[in-house]
Amino acid sequence: MANFTAADIKALRERTGAGLLDVKKALDEADGDTDKALEIIRVKGLKGVAKREGRSTSEGLVALTVQQSTDVEGEVGTLVELNSETDFVAKSDPFLNLSARVLDATVAAGAADVDQALSADADGKSVQEVIDSTAATLGEKVQLRRVARVAGERVASYLHHTAAGLPPAIGVLVATNVAGAAVAKDIAQHIAALSPQYLSREDVPEDVVASERRIVEETARNEGGNKPDHIIAKIAENRLNKFFEDVVLLEQPLAKSPEKKVGQLLSEIGGEITEFVRFRVGA
Image (cartoon, rainbow, N blue to C red; front, side, top):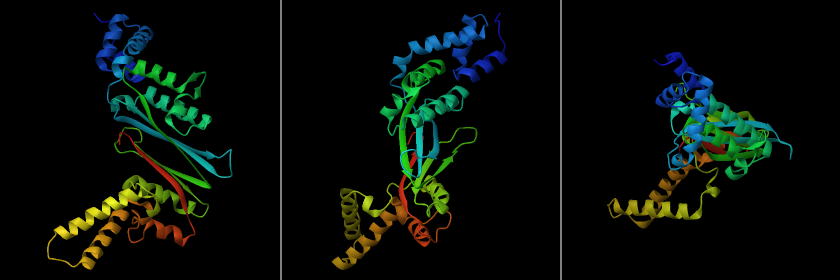
């Protein structure tokens, strides 16, 4: 008869984030000794690292922090996306603790990309080593997918939960001047909701604009009616403006007050956005 209870299984799953069958097998092998079972899970997890490499990691969380800049006057924000295979692991204590360690090490190193973050020191080990060790315990592939660092006179942040009981899945950082800080939180929430791709029209690559212009012009011609060229040009220009409104932050109607565009809101208070970044888990 098994020398452990359902409560033991539940406790070890919460402690490790490992699957139900893996926990039961480990407890069986350890004759109910939870510490020995934990060691078994870790050992078997390490042996399975190579097998996990090809797995998909579409779950996970985003984590961020904003601090005073040590380089220039202002603030700096750091945003990371840490992925797992399942939402069960994503909400487990070991994964949440790992994300905090990864974020702390990334910030301490001033890392601005994944490679820099993975090589950063985390209490005597590299971040990559810490991730691999935790992944062994969890029995899932764990991946640091993205890292971003945003600096400005002021940096606002926003985290959004897309499902109850799960960690944040959307994270936003917005760098503004001092005046823009008054509305930065609203704009960060707007970015989370509407996912703009560019800050201004000037930031949209020329080839993207040219391609979109060809599409709207061709569509206008194919709609029939033998429209003269100047009418087609007008229709195309209106549709191109709608395209900019969809993808450019400053052109978008503010989610909180759609009668006003983001750019207009900023200009009324002398505000300016210098940079923004948005992560959504798995996207």
